[in-house]
Image (cartoon, rainbow, N blue to C red; front, side, top):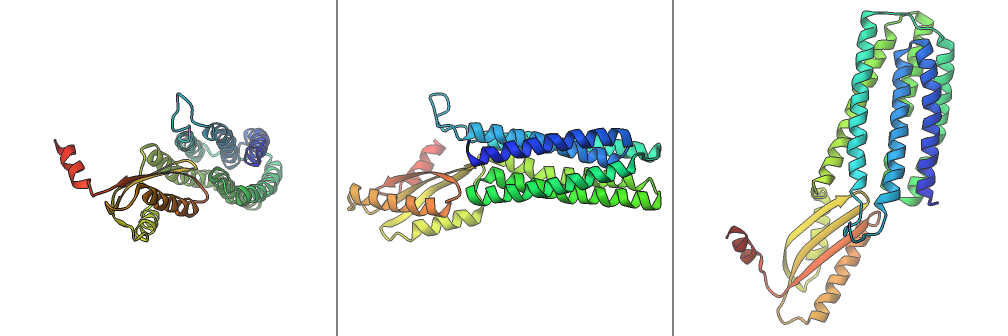
Amino acid sequence: MRLEKKATVVSTSVAGLLVLIKMIVGIFSGSIAVLASAIDSFLDLTVSLFNYFALNNAEKDPDEQFHFGRSKIEPLAAVIEGTIISFSAVFILYEALKKFVHNEPMQHITESVLVMVASFVITGFLVLFLNYVAKKTKNMVIKADALHYKTDLFSNGSVLIALALISYTGEQLIDPILGVGIAIYMIYSAIPIIREGVLMLLDAAIPQEDIQKIQNIIESEPEITTYHDLKTREAGSHIFISVHAVFNIKISLYDAHLISDRIEEKLRKLFEDKKSHILIHLDPYDDSIINKIEDIY
């Protein structure tokens, strides 16, 4: 089993354990903060399962049904994950507002504190492990998973502080106030996840600064007189680049092909953390104007 998949198995197992412990303590204590943390851990479990599914399928080779592979499974999973996070945040917000109206005192505060301390320590070790895997494999899914669990460290820490304040001051409203804060934070975190996934599914171009780097590489070749129809898109860990490069009509096809190979090699080094799919069309003249006229008619 690849190291990336082992990492998703570890993160899934840890998230499952935390969900079980937090859910039991959250229900018995009546703490919205602990319950919110339990739901957050459940989302972590869902995310890790999605990541395992995405890694297991996105890297499959193209076949007769999927000529370009299954790399779009990753952004599809991101959209689903972000949607689940948003709905869960709404549920937490509802429970917190309900507790503002029915201010029932918390129970088993000591047990809740112990659970959150254990959760904080376990999550900390998991983040260290995922960071190690991310640096070694340079896998974007594992990097995202590590970043997600880093945010959980802050969430668990804030819940721990809230429980300590309730135990010290006896003020029960701290719990629903924190629940509202966690819900808003979860929605805020879900929006960019959904946005990035949707943009990938819609084949949005890569960032402009990366496009400029591609243009610089093409323009560094003196044999290329001009170029057009530069198009880019991403799908998970895959990047797709296509361009029409215009050469002098006197150049041989062999020499033009060597130049295109050199450009492809530079582009693969530019995006070395991704699997690059590069298509360079060799033009003996600039046919961009003709193509535009044909598109009109």
